Structures are given as structure tokens and as C-alpha cells.
Amino acid sequence: MTGDPLVTLPAALAAPGARRQARFLLGVDGGATKTLAGVLDLLHGSLHLGHGGPSNEDAVGAKAAVEALLEAAQEAIDGAGTETGQLSAAVLAIAGTDTDSVTRHVHRARGDSWIVVNDVVGAWATATGCAPGVAAIAGTGSNVFGVGEDGRSWRTGGWGHLLGDEGSGYWLGVESIRAALRDRDASGPPTRLGEEASTFFDVPSIEALASLVYSKPLTKGEIAAFAVRTAKLAGEGDQVARELFARGAQLLGGQIVAVIAQTGLRGSFPVGLIGSAYKAGPVFMEPLEKRVRQDAPQAQISLVEMAPVGGSLLLAARACGQQDSIQPAELTRLIESALKA
Image (cartoon, rainbow, N blue to C red; front, top):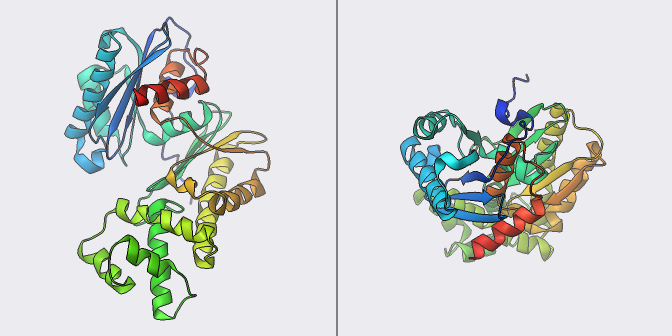
């Protein structure tokens, strides 16, 4: 059973807008832990950032989310020495299962010209430069989104830690703890994951960690952080750890392939990889690439260097027909420089 796309591009972004004079572009990346806004001055080639608290409605509610978004946006606008009314385009890419409530509040506060999209749309723009292609996110959670040549879009995954997040840091962390418990029970192959987990979580044994998972309980972020140790063991040759990465890559690769099929992508196109899970290196990347190339041999698979706020700015440029005014590499440099400052 296949339904309609879960995430689509709004009309203002479905195709490059009519080119018009533009100077100030606003892009916002809103997440569960923080919000980062940027105002790009096309005239002077400068970028000004603003910061805010969490803006994921699922985490903090719509009211607090909108307050964080507007706070970060205003700081960036003030830093650029301009005003809200002088913005040529504004795109807010926010995390959350449903952005409708946040969209209504933003439009009430700033008007319908401010475009609100799910953060996977911003990730796609970051990964592809707004070109046909795919973004595969694997951080604490996982999600895949792509757009085809004819504008068809499709999302796979994104169902959260209880129902999905395959190949993510959380998935790898949970599966590592499960593998360690199977070793403890003698129902699974031997692995050093139990010893590593006991040290990492500062507990006397793997069975004590099992109790901690339920009694504390451990957060998604805490469990996802253990994936770094799983990667370390995989690099040292622990076969169970290596197989976990191979299985996660197979599942995530299958989601990428599904997006490719549903969007009708063919030939050569970008598949951008975004998130901390890819820092595991070849143990994860190689089986992932192998799985994707079985169905898309010419796909250009690469790690994405640009910060997510860059995707929102590229979308803002697209909205006013200025998509050729700045190259992704230059935008990446501007963002890195502004973050350091």
C-alpha cells in the first residue's frame, strides 16, 4: 500500500521563482535542541547569524517553538542591519512530525510570505543545492527525502525511535546494547560491546545497564552517543559491531533506493549524507554505497559539509529566482566563518 507523499515542496519552492531584485535572504534551521538563523546579504556577500532555543513543536510545543524561531530570526536580521520588511525571502526549515501549527503562528506573526517547511526539505536543499537528488539524514534519528526531475517528492523513514530510525545513532546504540545482552545470555555471538557499554555508561555490568535503560530512563541522545564506541570496536575488528553497521547500512540504503524509485530519479544525481552516524567511516559508508549502487550505479554519493541553515538560505534564494547568485561552496565558507566568529 503506497499513499501520497508525506512531505511535498510548497508551491513557492516547487520550481525556481521568477527572478526579481533581492538583497537580504533569511534562512532558519529549527531543531529539538537549538535554532540557528542566518541573513545573507547578497549585495555584500556577508552572512549574519542569530541563535535561539529549541523549536521542535514535538519537544516544546508550538508557542515556545515559534518564539525561538522568531527570536533567532530577529537577531540575524538586526545583525545584518536591516528590517523584516526588507527581506526578499524567508524560509524556515523546522523539525517535527507536524509543522502546520507552527506555520499558522509564524504567518500570523510575520505574514504569509514567510515559508515554513519540514527540516527534511532544508536537508534536501543542503545536500543537493536544490537540484534533483536525495538527502539521507542519519544523526540521532534517520530520515530520507528526495525530489525528482519532474518535481515529484518522497520521504521514507522519519518514524521515530520506537518505529524506525534505521541506521541512526540511536538505532545503532540500541542494537549494540541488545547484542551485548545476547552475548551475556549466551544466545548470541561473543562481542566486546558489553565491556565497552559498561565503561561508557559507568555501570558495573551490562545487566546493570539494562536496568538503567528502564529505570532512569536513558534519553535518545545518551543511547545514540554510544554508537561512537560501536564504531571504535568495529574498526578494531569486533565482528558483531561490524555486522551492526552493515545491517544499518542495508536498511538505510533500502530507504534511499525507495526514494529514488518513487521520485523517478535516473542516471547521475546527488545523494547527500547528513549526520553524525556517517562519522563511523568505511564500516558504514561502504555497505551503504554498495546497497545504493545496486539500483542507482551512477548516483553521486557524498558527505555533506554545509550546515543545515545553508539549505534554508538556498531555498530562500530559489523562492526569489536568485538560486544562481551564490554557490553552495561559498555559502558553506560563509557559514563556517560566521560560526567561528
